[in-house]
Image (cartoon, rainbow, N blue to C red; front, side, top):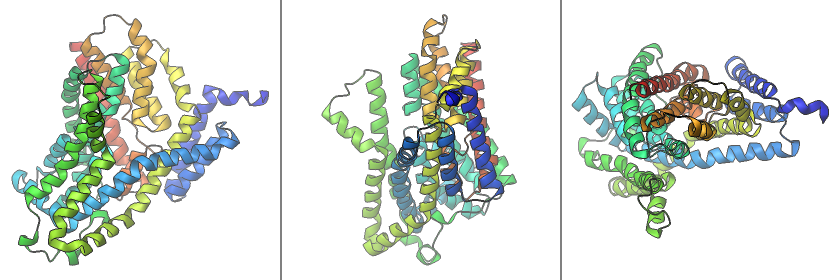
Length: 461
């Protein structure tokens, strides 16, 4: 065992992480090996090389894979059913037509982005993107353009709200660690999130849509025999479509909003009523309730036979999405279990740089090393808590800007070990190389812009 003592050295662990990412790039991009196979293979080899016990390798792989599936599979499955019902019933087209008629063709991506910013206030990134996807596809289909023109502004909106604005768990947890005021963080987060989204998602989305012509995915594509022959009187009403979209938002807000109030000591968290309301607001439960309401609304017009068929049809295309997303989570779990993230944090924590810059760099390093933005954000906040305690002159605004800077670092460089990378890749029907050139670039823009805005605000106030 003495000869293997170098396994726990930071330089060795960082070398392993770099080698794993390079191996994935080669297997997926150059060797054209399926992403699920490549991620499974590299996860196994990385676990062994990084020094995880042979007896713990398979449990580590399975727990990471299963943990990701537990958070993704239900959301994607329920969201796909809701999306399919909205699509084949013409509901997505009704909403798309209203957006286009109100804002016009040139402003359609802006309208989708603004709607996603509103929906993204309480709803998590993956759930929001799944629910909005049929509307995004309907608008893209109407104008016959690259889906990136319409998808990136919406996806970027959910990303910035999830990363920078309470009541999402990442910024709330970081605020608790660092002692930032939640209400002030909400205001500072919105002030920074909106221009960050406009520059890094909306404007970049317009550029990427012109450069990369990505066709529509079949996941929410219209069935000509089911939707093409619908008459205007058979289409759902605009109000019913809005109800389906707003219902999960309102339900999820009960959970995230109550959690914020508990963290701020506004209400007691041990009440049975609070527990029940938070249960209804958990994302899988909220989507299940929304699906049941959708079935109740549409079954009157189309019958349960059609509803059952559409729900079944929606599940077949998402198997690949779920498996590849789970494998990405498995790879990230291996990197976390191996201690690579801790090695990076240890090297950067005592560099003597300004605390806001240290927060951004440590968080970005953890994000690159293990994939999870929430883990990177909360871990960095915990690491910096002692530094914040001994740093004098930090105002309430400074603490909020520090949270935003850490969240910015946790947003950049989404790649193979991020389950969100694979979710976006598969939903938008992009290969890995194109996803790196579009989604990864946009995430890096968003995180970097948020950090720069946070630094400027901290200098002004």
